[in-house]
Image (cartoon, rainbow, N blue to C red):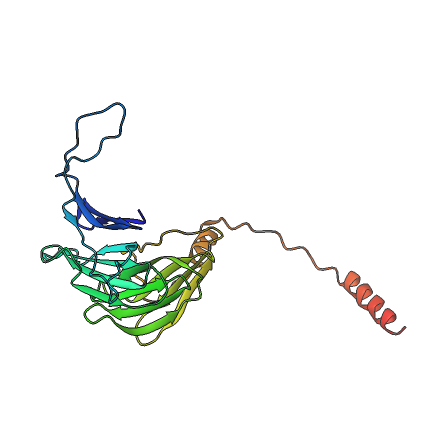
Length: 257
C-alpha cells in the first residue's frame, strides 16, 4: 500500500491503493469481520464498497501494471462526492466515478516520470497541481488533461503539496531538500516564502483560519516581547573633559610618527 486517504466531510470512508493494489474505497460503518481467531488477525468478511478495475490492455495486448501513488476525493463538501482522482507511478492521472464504472472515466497520460503526489485547488476542483520525482510542479485542467503551466519550485523531490485557502492563491511544498517553499499562483508566479526546516518533512497543510493576504511581519513577536519589558533608567555619568583631551592628544602624537 502506498496511500490511504479519508474522505473529507465523511471520515467513515477512506480509499487505499498501491503497487498492484487497485483503488479501493471502504466504509468502516459497513465493514463486517469474521469471528475472532486467536491465531490470525481479524479480517473483513465482506468486500470493499468500491473496487476499481484496471484499464484495458495496451495495443500489444499486454496487461498494464498498477501503481497508485496518491488519492484525492473530488467535489468534497458537495452532493457529488462519487468522483475520485488518483495518480500513478507511470505518469498517469485517472478519474473514477464510483456510480458510473469501475474503470476510470478519464485516463490522462501526463508525464513520463512517476507522479509522486498532487493537490486539488479548493477554489476550482478542475485545477490540479502534480509533481514528479524531479521536483517540477505541473498545473493541469482535469476536464481535458492539458498542462496549463509549470512551476520550477527547486525543492528536490517534493513529498507533499497543499493549496491555500478557499481562493487557492498559494501553493506550499516540502521536499527532500528540507525546505518549505510557498509559491504564488496565477499570472504572477513567484516564490513568496521559503525556509530551511532542518528535518525531512513528509506532509504540509494550511491553517485556513489565518489569512495569507498581505504582508506578514515575521519579527512582530520580537517587537511585542520588547514592548512588555520594563524600562530601567541608569544615572548619567558626568563627562570628564580632561580625560578626553589627554586621549585626543595621545592619538595626535602617535599619528605624527
